[in-house]
Amino acid sequence: MNDHGHVNDAYRAYGEIWSDIYDEYAEALKKSVETDRAVSFLAPLAKGGTALDLGVGHGHIALPLSKTGASVHGLDNSEKMLASLRASSGGDAITSHLGDMAQFDLGTQFDLVYCINNTFSHMVTVEQQLGCLASIVKSLRPNGRFVIHLNYPYTADFSGAGIYGDQRTTVIHIDERRAMVRFARHDRNQQLVISQDLWITPTESRTMPIKVRYFYPTELDLLARISGLELLERYGDWQRRPFDNASWRYMSVFRKAS
Ligand SMILES: C[S@@+](CC[C@H](N)C(=O)[O-])C[C@H]1O[C@@H](n2cnc3c(N)ncnc32)[C@H](O)[C@@H]1O
Image (cartoon, rainbow, N blue to C red; front, top):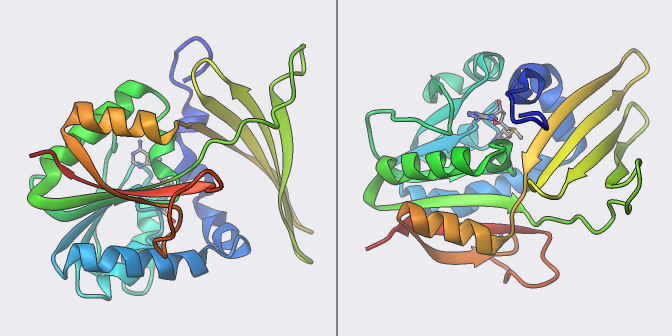
């Protein structure tokens, strides 16, 4: 959506724009350490049954989770992301679906539905987020679990007012081969962070747009409750450390409300 409420394709096409460098980006950010921990957290909840990965991307979680014995499906709105998933080693074990997680019905129910790495925030309106939660409720088996992993909103360093206000620049990554810098703007009324990531290597420099709608755990719990989900557990990391005022992310486990 742009500031006038119209769909902006550049932001909706995240997967199409990022797919060709997503693995390198994830590796640069050392997400794989987290991936192992996330899979250890999720596997007992899938119980070797069925799981659905929302915004599956290249399958960084889905692929190792399927090796634990679960039958894993992945939903994504990017054909490029799904093509890359299917081409990966073990990709044929994942049942992939092209679709919008803001509203889906895969015609089956799962023991576990999960949405990892802040992916839920890619839905940039409350309506999309509510649509997603309603779809999740329909897609969960009676004793199923929904796991969501989000970054805790941190907006304090968007500098003040004026025509250049509510903006920040963050160095995301530097090594001997590449750097990534994020230029971000904060729309505090709509709880949006609108960014361009600048990816620089010796041979290329490109920008990649991202738009996310952030929210605090209290809003997530309210949206979930309205949708028919109840919170069971919340942690500050994948190793189940407590969620507290120093946490910069949060992992929440929901089930259908009784
Ligand atoms: C940050 S990536 C995360 C990928 C994967 N979950 C991981 O942790 O590596 C976000 C993914 O969500 C997908 N996505 C974004 N908005 C979506 C939507 N509305 N419906 C389905 N997929 C979406 C993107 O194409 C992309 O693959």
